[in-house]
Image 1 (tube, rainbow, N blue to C red):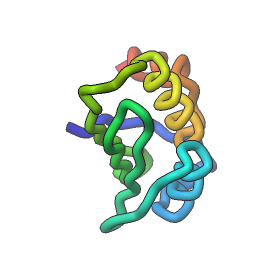
Image 2 (image 1 turned 180 degrees about the vertical axis):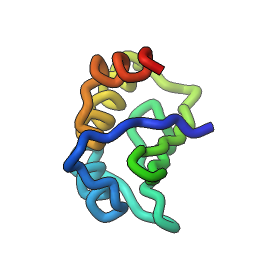
Image 3 (image 1 turned 135 degrees about the vertical axis):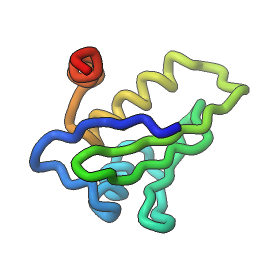
Image 4 (image 1 turned 30 degrees about the horizontal axis):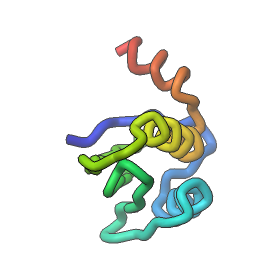
Amino acid sequence: MARTYPVKKGISIEPPELLSRVKESTGNGEIKDGHVFCSIPGIKTIEMYRDGKNLLVNTENDPDNPDPMKTIRVFNDLMETVTGFSSKERKKRFSKV
């Protein structure tokens, strides 16, 4: 199931721009069928795609993850780079719903 992330105004989530920010943050990434795919240590696959003004993200975890705290930190940094919102700001927005 995809999780919805709000995106700050002025940040483009079109696949080419999204791929550029993903590569800047993770060092890898590719576009398939308009979706951006990447991976980080602890998460096998991260799939991102646009849904109107929001970003939908699917993840597939790695069950053999040796350092879950590092995975969370890297994922939060990636989401901040892509959406413009820090984890604290995203938490505030999610709790309003």
